[in-house]
Amino acid sequence: MATKEQGDQAYARAGPARLPWSYPISASLLFVVVVSALFLAFPGVDLWTSHLFYQSGDGFFLRHDHALQAFRYSGRIAVIAVVAGLVVQLVIKLAKPERPSYVPPSVTLFLFSTLIVGPALLVNVLLKDHWGRPRPNAVDLFGGDSPYVVVWRITSYCDTNCSFVSGETASAFWLTALALVVPKPYRLPVAFATVIYATLISLNRIAFGGHFLSDVLLAAGLTLLVIAVGYRLFVAHPPGWLANDRLEAGLTRFGQRLHGREPSDAEPR
Image (cartoon, rainbow, N blue to C red; front, side, top):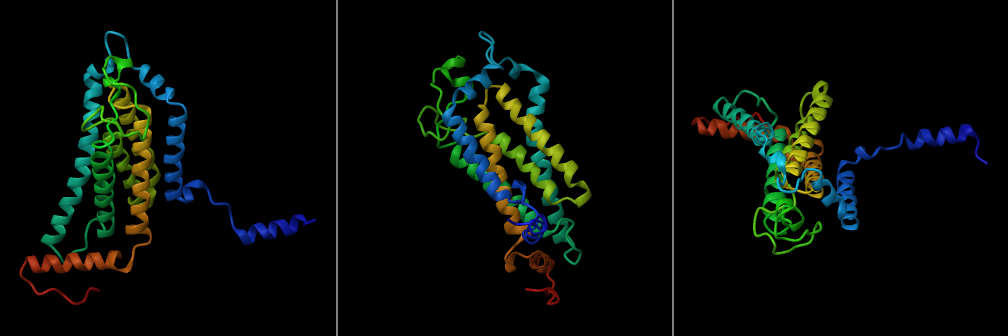
C-alpha cells in the first residue's frame, strides 16, 4: 500500500489538476454537446421558459417596453463601437506607419476573424438562414401558426432569419473576447461585465419571443468555441507567419508604401 508521502510525491510529479476552463476549446465544445442533448431530451424546457414571458391576448408583452427595446439595440451599438475602434487604430497605424500599433495586430486579427467566423458566418449565414426553426412568436402555442421544432432539426417552416440560433446573443457574447486581450488587471472585470451584459441581451431576446432558451445557449456556446479556437490560433500559439511582430512589420511596410516611401528592411519578414 502506498504511503501518504509516496502519494504526495506522485501528485507533485503530476502537477495540479486542470480545471475545465484550462481547456477552453474542449469545454466550449462539451457545453454545446450537453446543451443540445438536454434540449433534444427535454424540449419542454424551451416551451416552459418562453411561456414565462407570454400572456394570452397580449403575446410576449415585454416587447412593447421602450427601455427593453433600447437595451436590445445597445448590443448592436456595442459591437459597432468595438469594430469602429479597431478600424480607427488601423487607419492611424497606416497614417503613421513607423509608430507601433495601438492594438497589437494579432489582437486585431483575432477580434475581426472571430466576429466574422462566429456571429456573421456560422450563426447568421449558415444556421439562421438554413435551419428553418420558427421563432417562439411564430409557434402555434404562442399565437403563431407553426409547430415547435427541436434544436438542430432542419425544416421549411421558416425561410430566412430564423430562430436557430440567436444572432444577437452571438454578437453579445463575442464581446467577451475583449477580456482575453485587455491588460491583465482589467481582464476579470471585463469578463464579468461582458458575460453579464451578454446574458441580459439573451434574456431580452427570450422575453421578446424572438428566441428560445436553447437558441441563446447554443449561440453562446458556439461563439465561445470560435473565440477559443481563434485565441489559440492568433494570440496564444500562432504559426510563425501570424506572429505579432511579423504582422506589425507587414503593416509598417504597407503603410510606408501607401506614403510612397521605400519600406524599411529592419523589420522581420
